[in-house]
Length: 333
Image (cartoon, rainbow, N blue to C red; front, side, top):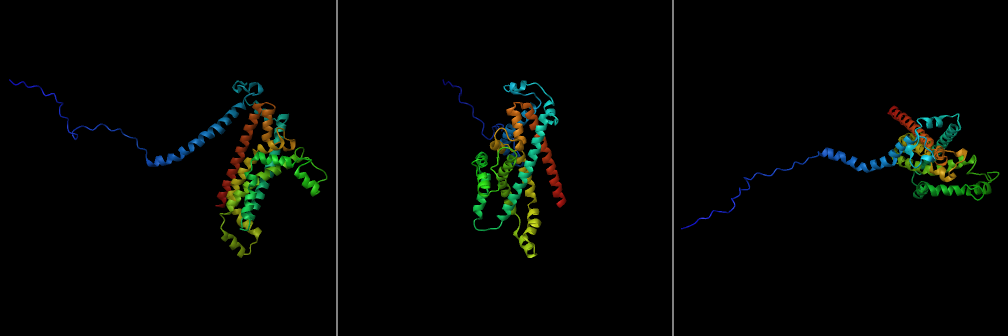
């Protein structure tokens, strides 16, 4: 008798072709145009974050501080300082009170300083760039020497000038009084009315190489054929500068003057290193004045209000300058 056992082998699997395919995950495809357009923003993201943390956040904090009575008693937790509203701004712009009068004096000193420093820096930079335009032996060495003041660290350069302006053993008095005999005595340069002159000299010495560098780059874009044609027509050197060089450099000068104005009007390092924490009245720039109002008298609320007023002034001047220059370009076109 034969006993049959059930077949325990697994059932034959279906052929691969008949087996249903597993569902495939759908991938979100980003269009190439969007991917390429978003790459620049992705590269700019670290700079935008740093700009937010370094400039915008402190700016907002400073604006909030300007509405509080913030003195040395609330430094540990400035958010607990009493609310002042517009009191700090009224105090700053009250020109009949000592605080407002001092701020107004500092503002006018800064305006005169900015006009002289920017004008002389642009003039010296323009003359040097024009003289360096034509090729001659040693031009590369002179270009390097001209850029030394711009390349030096500001503290090292200004400290050197502070030693040179010393009354008894400074180089300036030694040359002007002892060698050239241009002064009746040895004047003080870091105190009194002469401090304004010393400040302008140091600022021009530091700023004109930047103007020279920008203008020299702009001169490279002027075709030499224009000068050759003007020379053939009988135009002299001054007519060529007036009719060709300066009109061609107008776009460069528009940006250069604005940058020099903002740098010079906000300059803090030069007067602080040259005169210390307390600048003479003749050289009391608004940046030093705000520093003294904040960190010397410990009235951070008033100092913050002055800083906000300075920011608004610079924004208005910059906007007016850009509007004026844009209208000039449209008129020329």
